[in-house]
Length: 337
Image 1 (cartoon, rainbow, N blue to C red):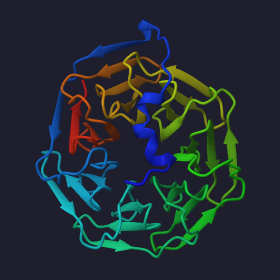
Image 2 (cartoon, helix red, strand yellow):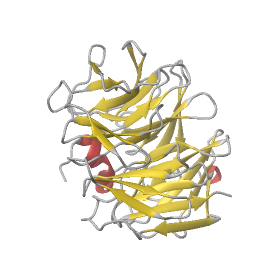
Image 3 (tube, rainbow, N blue to C red):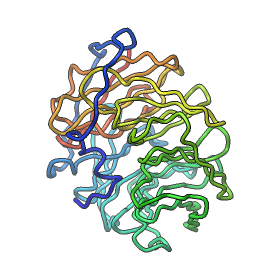
């Protein structure tokens, strides 16, 4: 599988730096219950299995399978269906749209796709910029879909009718493949992460502001999500921390725990008081972490297969945490306490 910076971060375990941690700020616990589902998922080579995941409008979870160019759906009971008809290249990021459909990216087809809850796929024309390689995607506060274009160092927007706008002015990245995550913010803007150490904010009309003060140098920013506290929360894979940034740009960094794992994806939890994140590497123990709004971390390890490589995570409408396990072709479900 081809790998740019936005693909390779999940495979870079060996090069990560580790911190000494404050044992009073975290604890390792058994979860209330972890279940891993594999029946119905087609086998792939290591690290090309289920990748991104999102809660769908139908009460199910939807995930991408870039290794076999399919979109998967899993019910709260664990029944999996895969869809391939109409998908011409590897789907990568996925999100629920404002139109009751799921929207996904195809980095190597350089396009955006859409799938209904019945599995009917529509693919839109290739993006205006060749080699843009769209990766992660989110529903914006303006009810358009917004996505990052790591290959072109741009932010893209697509309407539900398929009209694309690309923004590059005001995104002074030093190299391609720096854009790593994107989410809708609480302030009517869209926020994105840059691996090299910046958080970006883009308004619906394309005005970009970037923030770096308070972010540790070479932190390795990955995913970002809106928190229940009105702030944005993001992962720092190189230094094993979780970051928080206010809409005005004030940054706080918290330890992500003590296990020798790196945090990658992050999502708001079902309790309104926490964020949940994936931790792991392809050849290491795997964990799901929870961080409260005060920065207290709990790591859940028991029940997750060694080397599972948890990648993306989402809170389902069933109030459970659902995550992809790219290295073992499974979807995990964690019932929070």
